[in-house]
Image 1 (cartoon, helix red, strand yellow):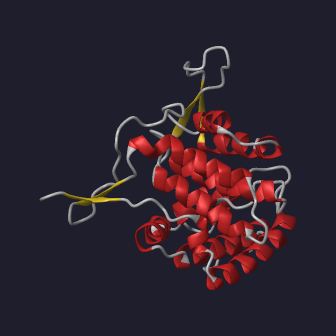
Image 2 (cartoon, helix red, strand yellow; image 1 turned 180 degrees about the vertical axis):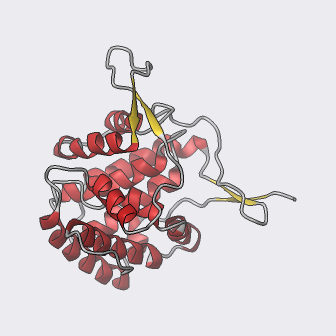
Length: 264
């Protein structure tokens, strides 16, 4: 099979997606997120709770099992000192949200977090990377490695700064998709991107807790989340990702209220 490659375009700036229609959807999502915050877990990982709830309701969220080689040593930064299960990782990561949201979130903190959730200790990639080939053998090349560092700075600027009149949910979505679009690390990009979504919510004051368990919901979506991301990247449309986040909010509310699973 002949393999062809498509170059991933840089995700458009946030302002491009702030159309009247998207802004209206953003207002609804912001209000839904504020309402969801009252159900937020105070003593448990919402990702772990969502995973157990979906499994108990017959939804497959474990297509593979993994443990994380975690760097917990400050004195020997490249020494692997522990192995984390997925559950342990979520518990530690979510507990650090208040700490990360209190001050500016810079590249040092970003790599510190990424080291928790990566087998490669948050290393920035030094080569070009690609998606897995589709059935026709076509793969997508992520943005060039030469652009990665400057793109991370752009993303962190959006994480740390709020624009008057801009819906928080739209900015959180853009940060998440821009990070995935950049794909800066050798490993752990998906978990980190979804964490940044929640970090934007925390910095905005919508919730001081980790709010949406997007990593687990993505596993349960059986490949739908990447389709939403590709539509934003390749077709410049937020329509599908907005619906995905709205569904995630409804699922999280059902989970925290311990209601039977039903597709929103």
